[in-house]
Amino acid sequence: MKKMDPSELTIRPFHLLDKEWGLLATGKEHPNLMTVAWGGFGTIWNKPVVIIYVRPTRHTFSILKDQPEFTLNIMPETYRKALEICGNQSGRTVDKWKAAGLKALNSDVVTVPRVDGADLSFECRVIASFIVDPVRFLDKAIEKLYPERDYHTAFVGEVCAVWATDRFCP
Picture (cartoon, one colour):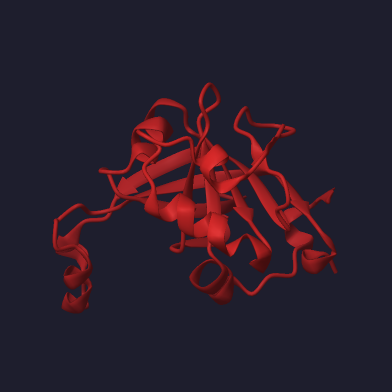
């Protein structure tokens, strides 16, 4: 992996999280992992950002509120089973790193670790968050995704560093 400028990345943004998923790492004392499939990449307030969505019922949510930093790690297909474990287990009761056979790497800028073996890692500091408000749903079918009415909070993370393998470098 090499450190690179976010503007040099070559990614398929509509494919990346939806089809490959990502591993979100939060917390510095006892880092937690969570599989994510919803999110976005872009620019806001003249900053490169990653936006991730976390339900308030998730262990990751309280960690992000207390320690507003995260890494988003895109893993190769060989890690699909690890992604499934991290998406189906709760960090409240399981050490997902151990359960999924994953190792932490020190980040360069944030205190949250990256995931060893990732093809792409974003180090991010949360600069804003907002609750997804169902009153604003213009497509009422979206409401069906929230049978428990546990609406996501969007966390906007300023990209502080990007690490990538050749798969994502020009």
